[in-house]
View 1 (spheres, rainbow, N blue to C red):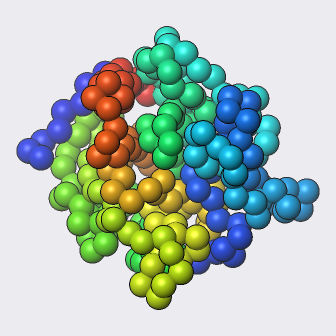
View 2: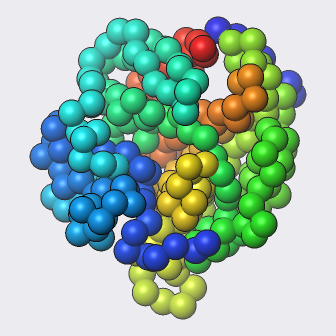
Length: 248
């Protein structure tokens, strides 16, 4: 795998997702919030995880059986696009995210359908972002709330794309007028197959390194995230996973 960087809606508030992943109930006895649109999941969809040692990563309850941990060759997927990489010990693989920590950080593998003009108030871009790599990279780079880097060219395992980096602000999570709405969520993206649902930052000052790739017509986003106090070892683990990625 090569990575060659060039120089540097709003939705019903009770139904929005933290990351569209599982809360790791099988690993840490965590409450799972469902993101399924089916009526049988309605009650679960309105819950917030409680008593977790690994913070809220939510998805359908069935995903709890798919959590894998430990080191070795691991897999993930973005739609129909398979991804393989080397997973260090101590990380939990959800099939589309590899995570640890409280608050959660790690890698996400996603298709992105839209972003937000106001992340704190959960106001989605209307009309939605265009379908290309450049469309998405430009929207993130031009979002004033993110103060992101300019998009730079990258190549990951032979696939071309753009890299954008930003650190979410030290946003407030209370009930004051200027605080982030919807429980203090700072929205980052909407999933391509779930308009209105999406991923929010797992805490203030979380850094995001985003790879936006065109993989045979599928726009693949690989997001590496961490916090200012993330350990050097965990940062090294993230770099190891990124450098070992193979696509397809």
